[in-house]
Every structure is written in structure tokens, then in C-alpha cells.
Length: 357
Image (tube, rainbow, N blue to C red; front, top):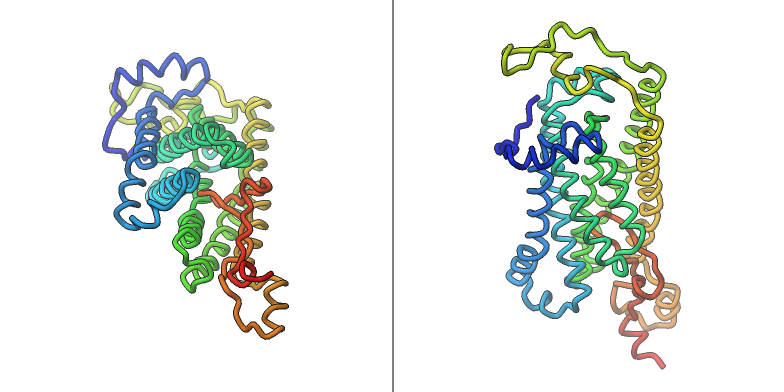
């Protein structure tokens, strides 16, 4: 399937990118560099202008009362919400409509290229490039875990431009299916809806989607990509005999394999460093997902379970729990629970505790 994006790569931009692409062996990057830059610019615009404007319109009193740190967090969550909704829709659409992708064997999944999957790579890489910049600029706010996630995700999606495991771009971006619910959960905290039915139902959906998409689906697909890469390492140059390598421009058509493998007609070999880099980054992402899921369960439970001190006070006859918020673990827009001591973990006292003593 060809790249369905309505804008082709500007020739001057593709020519400007070509030397970098050759140096890094990212053959398809010039075809999709415009999508990377458009995504980067779009998310920067949403963060710097769109999120503050719409937030000041929708919740003017609350947004104006936020301190600088909370406003930054809020704007980042708005970007994450917008990005996850857009990329999930596009990835599911590509997986449903790309017939070439559906027919791939391990060779196609490792070496094959379709423009539609590369479009997903481009938009994802643009977002993670923006995410990396934000993580570096505000590492004191978001922590080293988010920085590691940004680096790993950008590496994984950038290597797809070789092309390498281009097939898995829509597959792994579906991790983001849990992100809309994560952001709604976070917004509830900031809008004084902690412990509400909205947050409860959304929290259940958050845990369900995070567990199913990142832990179950993500682990299963990781095993599949490990198997495919191992098969490629064990079977170097296992490509078909191309009937005719004349370009589409002069010939008008190519057989399916020639088009699918047009960037790997001379060599089909997976270097050990490439396999280790990709799989290592994938392991980092999966490990972080399991760690963050545990933190998320803890955070959600604390919002709906009274603390030990509150239980004692209720048994003593106070009959009032006060605020439902309780101890809170801060989570960012990717579903990452932070634990960096007093800078991030906020312990909010209930009204009862403030009056006591």
C-alpha cells in the first residue's frame, strides 16, 4: 500500500535529507521526512498554543490557578491525548486496509516496506522526537524513566526507515490505546474529580487497556518480532529472485515481491548490532510497561481506598472521610508512574487531618 498521506515529500527536503539518510542507512527517510517534521511541528503547536488556548476556554478558573509546573504537565497531557487518538486511528486503519501487509511472511515483516506503515513510522517518530526534546528540557519534572522511554521509542521507530521491521510500526504504536484513558484519569485529579464515578469507570478502562494492549499484546508481538529477527539472522540473503528491477516510472508495474523488497534487492542481512539495538530498546519499553502498570494499580487503588488513619478515625466515630484523594502517585501522559521522592509523589492531607491536633 502506498503512502496515503495527501502531501508528497517536497523534493528539496528529500534532497536535503538524502545525505543523512545515506550516512545512517535509513533508505526510506527522504520519502517520509515531511511527515516526521509535520508531526513534530504539530505537537509543538498543540503544546505551546493549542493546549493553553483550549484549556483557558474550557476550564478558565482551574487552568489559571495552576502553577507553572502543573500547567506544563497539563499541556503535555493534552498533547498526549491528541497524539494517541490520532495515531491509534491511523494505525488501526492501516492494519485493516493494507493488503500487502496482511500477506507478509517473516521475510516481509523484517525486510518489507509499504508506504502506509512507513507513514505511521513518520508520524510516530515526529512525536517521539518532540517527546525527547521535552524530556531533556524538563528531566527534573518528568524523570529519567520518561527520558529512557523517549529515547527507546525514537530509536525503534527510526530504525524502521532502513527499512527494518516496517511491518511492526502500526503494531507497536497500539501501545498508545491506553493513553487517552490515562490522560482522562490525570485530568480528573486536576479538576477535583478524584474519587468520582467518572474516574472510577475510566480507571477500570485504563487498567484494562494498559494490561491488554501493552502487557499482553505488546509482549506477544515482542516475541513475534524476536522470532522474525532470529529467522532473518539465521537465513541471510533469503530473498526471492526478482523478475525485473526496472523502475515503476519506466515499466509501469512490478511484481509484488519486487515492490515490497525494493529497498533490499541487493542484500538481506540483519547486522548483529541492529538486532541488539532494536531488541534492546524493545526490552526497555516492555520492562518499563510492567513497572508502570504496578505503579498505576497502586495509584488507582489509593484514590478509592481509605488510608489506615482514615479507617481509625471512621471507627472512632467521625463518620467522615474528608477528601477522597488520599496519597497520589503522579503519572505522565504515556501512562508512566513517577516515583522521585518529594518532587513528584504528593501526599494530600484530608480536611480531618488538617483540623486534627
